[in-house]
Length: 100
View 1 (cartoon, rainbow, N blue to C red):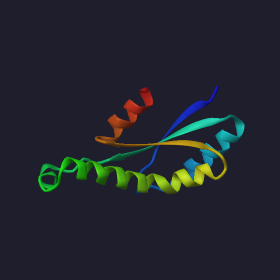
View 2 (view 1 turned 90 degrees about the horizontal axis):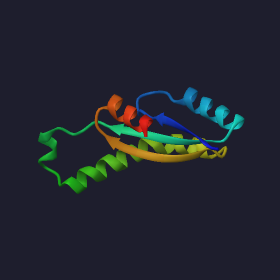
View 3 (view 1 turned 120 degrees about the horizontal axis):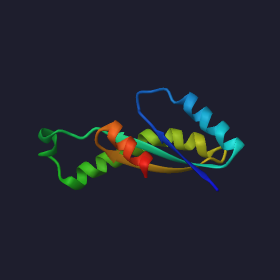
């Protein structure tokens, strides 16, 4: 049975230690890593100048850009990754994804 690991990724933090830990965990037993990037919601003043589709695209592109280097580094040695981009309060979103 493959275990799931939730790996929240923040742009402003050094993730080398976490990637190293996940790689070593994967060497002991197969794990599927769920990479999660939580984007801070744009305030109403910014939102009034863009369509919802544009804002959703911005969140998705920005989140994927944050996840890409981590995903690439984990997939090279064969660690399976699933990417998720969410918008909201980081702590609440991470807790919700962990429950799922």
